[in-house]
Image (cartoon, rainbow, N blue to C red; front, side, top):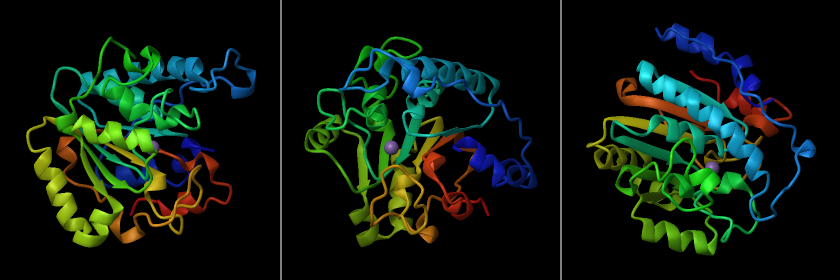
Length: 259
Ligand SMILES: [Mn+2]
């Protein structure tokens, strides 16, 4: 169900109750995977995904230009390659990437060929031109303004690239040992110099006991009490949420309902 599941859970009503004026821009059109051709095993459905993300990029740019706060709901995390690219440029944009994975693969290092394991690498300039040059040529983010939170699964080559990139990384072990409040404080201090923040939440960052309806569930994630709380909405440029598409039992939708 993807975005419809989150709508059905009352996201718009909850935001309205918090005092925001909500405008739903609807869905972007997505090709049917089984009907697309010319698939590349090292980056599956790359052409179709890039086509969708170009539309997402345009939406995100409009949000940035209007000075609004965008909320983008995606079936997988590749959506953030478009939302973040569209919001970047001009102001200094920071990114908090909350995810069990780093999404730091390229077609050369990805064991699966899943493009949803590549968006953060692409935003930092690593990967195929279809992703790196999305919307406009070149990388969209500076690693000094990127922080990953909740990481607990890295592929070997991905780990090397992530370490060399200079992006900030807080693993689940960091959170277990030091507590979420201390880690959150450090993340905010690290991004103290940015103008706007894009929070990108992959629901697989949450523990499967909280959000089982994701494509790649992995034990040892954030629990309900430790999930990213809302910070200062004034500095949010946008947030995107990826992952509820596989929810067969509406369990994830219910558990991630906004309070
Ligand atoms: Mn992800």
